[in-house]
Length: 259
Image (tube, rainbow, N blue to C red; front, side, top):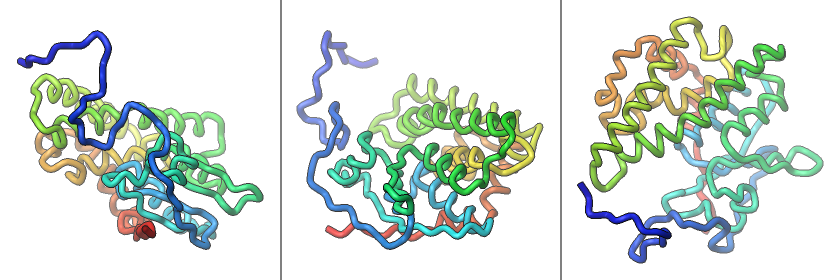
């Protein structure tokens, strides 16, 4: 039980010391560095962040002549609230990408949209038929809607929250396991999440759920969630983890921002 009383109108806590704020926008002037490559990526090795590095490495593996500069945005220090970053993504979330190869540079934010942008630009990892393309988008957008319950819900209350709250852990564990069960059932019927071929949907989902069942997201969560009970999901996750491009994406070198 808690002695918290719900106020009529919420007010920001005076003693709150976290980075989150109830307002959007930049908090300080910033000059993000630029490299010489056609794509400039500002990111971090989080589940959402690794999607972009993996995507670029998969494109290279397919013989696409593409290169990128990768800069580290330290979200624990608030780099994402600098003026240059906010000008690319007003939502202040990683990853973001600039395509400077176009006549007019293109800002791209939201990890799923970056995957889609690159897949469409280079004609790779996305089927051309209407039906197959739609199935990839079904699962790509499923990931964008489902992962906040995994990260912001289960991951937060299981791993990051300063106190263990049984109700919150039970609520989000049930949803996390429901999602794992869904993926396991789907992957019992097909080798990849959208069908016979590896696509951007697999990259997006593996970066969260593959890493989770591999025990790479939250200490002890693979045991807590009994991931051994999802054999099809485990087989898929292991298969993708062994891809050379995925391994290179995980090992990508994030250049520090100049201070």
